[in-house]
Amino acid sequence: MAVAKQDKQLPQLLLSFGSGLLFSVGLIVSQMVNPAKVLNFLDLAGNWDPTLAFVMGGAVMVTIPLFWLVLKRPHPLFAKSFYLPTRRDVDWRLIVGSTVFGIGWGIAGLCPGPALTALASGLLPVVGFVAAMTAGAFIYQWLFDTH
Image (cartoon, rainbow, N blue to C red; front, side, top):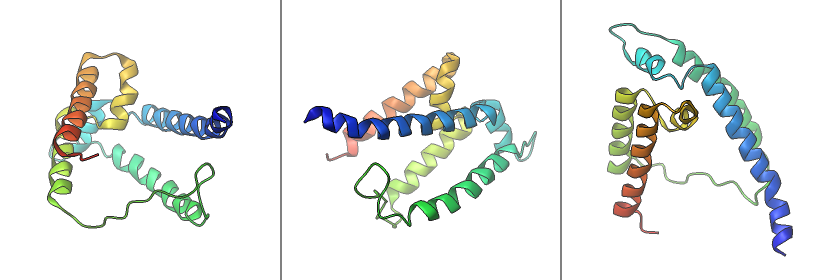
């Protein structure tokens, strides 16, 4: 029985790996793993670099129609149902979390996806960022998560 379950999970794992790999390659090609590129985008009064806006715009132009098509399906290819967020309220945790995320992004020029991709560079600041991000996730779980 366990072998049959593993056989069903293999396509989902391969699709997940392929999606993550494609996302990582996109981050590398667009130079979003380069903290200087991101920091220059945030520097409106100085050496502003608008290329991040084009990367985000391109991603949104692809994502919106594909989400619309995918969500017309009764369920995902390898799952029984879609797992979509149900909460739509704005609470203090969302505001504080967004603020902390933005401050960290502005200081380091990295956010979680590009940071994980940039780990392959082996650069100490990237490793430190990912270690701090991981520690923050564990601290949050310890303080707030009730599971």
